[in-house]
Image (cartoon, rainbow, N blue to C red; front, side, top):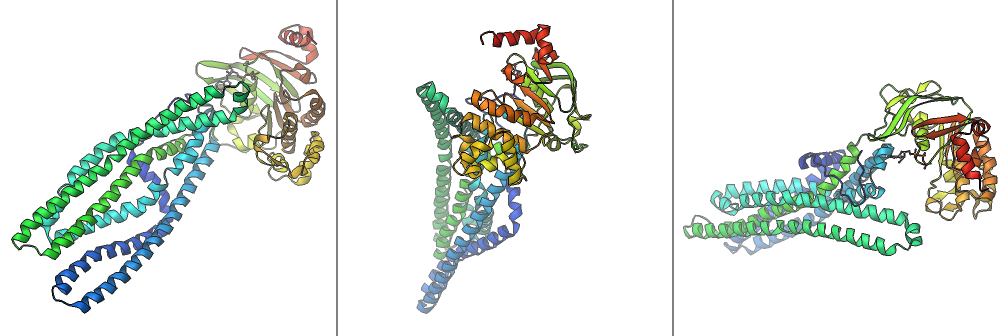
Length: 591
Ligand SMILES: Nc1ncnc2c1ncn2[C@@H]1O[C@H](COP(=O)(O)OP(=O)(O)OP(=O)(O)O)[C@@H](O)[C@H]1O
């Protein structure tokens, strides 16, 4: 998957506007009953608005022409009641539609989020988080108007146009023709505008995404920004992105604004040609004045829905790129998936075997080359080696966060590709240096390791890793609320909580990736004992740059240049005076 940087525009997706629109409208099908109700309501409102000109026509040509005042008053009362019903129906329709479109947005957002959670690490490696956020929030929001107007505008206005055309043609086909003469100009004009408009709105959404990504990264790294006093530089970069964003918006909006004048022009032209034809025909007594006035109303009734439809069309062109971006993610297949024939991995002992494993994140750079090793259940393996050697990669492959290109990985003789990902990862406990804590209570965060853990299990886990002491000293003990990412706790305390979270999950295979590197010496003593409790009875992989932390490991693998260069326990490797010895001496010569 190619990598997209913050300032690089994402690639445009071209699935076809109609296809995207139909896919979006499919979500509305769940609300068939409500939509039918809305359409019935709208049929009522459309009928009332169609009757109004007839009332006026009747009043002029019959009541007023015959001086029938009583008839005129009765007609007036009838018109008032009819229009009160009209107002009520319009409000009811708006309420139902708002409910439907909000529910659809909720469903789209849920589906998108659930799908994103299933995507592989490679997906997240390939794009900034802010750009993913832009799709879940901004792009989904942009669909709101398209959805609600699709029912309230598309269908009823279309029906209104057909009905008005039918009435006009029946009443007087010559006047009808004159009223609609400018229609082809409008259709061609709008079609031309939308071609460019769609591209411009696509660019705008991408610029919006870039801006989001920048803000997200900048806020996440605010401590670094401030400590390097780089506020000026980031503000300048932000301004630049902001200008690009604004420029893209202005360019897109300018084209959108062209829609209105095209319609106005065509409407005006229709009006002129109607009256011109009308005057000619009334002169020849071929048409009555009332009919001509009614036609004047019908022409508005004909062009107003066209105006609405063109606004909807405009809105659709504006926002369809949001839908395209959402569906693009929904159509992204997770690279790591369960095969059709997968089995559940039963409770494992924890034996691990790598057989001629080769792996590359991307085609050009091979990270592991033909790596083979075996680890017995309960063994503690330390992985050491220069930075970038591939230690984290080895442990990522055990949890199948990436798929290997060659070779096989077995856990208790089960190939990791033959078992379900969930059953595999459930038996793993992974701790990294960045132990992400969520907002919520301390208890919630520990329970994340095992969602059905009882309070007793949580406390036992915290005690086992020496986290209990500091927790009960916190303001509300286990119920203390944590801030985002555990801000407000010391680094050591965060690590202890993460240990407790892993402990409660009782994993058979434990991975500690630089998990203790940021702990101070005092906390390290506390944690060391916790770790030993954690390691007991489990197969463990410990990655540590500080060699003092891995002296008790059963075996140490020295990883370099894509393979295991040395292995053995600390004593054996020191005696060998090879790579490990050199690493060790480099670390301890100044101690
Ligand atoms: N997500 C990724 N996409 C592409 N390349 C990656 C990715 N993660 C790591 N690499 C590359 O793979 C190589 C091995 O990385 P890895 O993280 O396994 O090293 P490491 O030995 O754990 O390093 P360190 O000790 O610094 O944590 C490095 O060259 C790194 O640049």
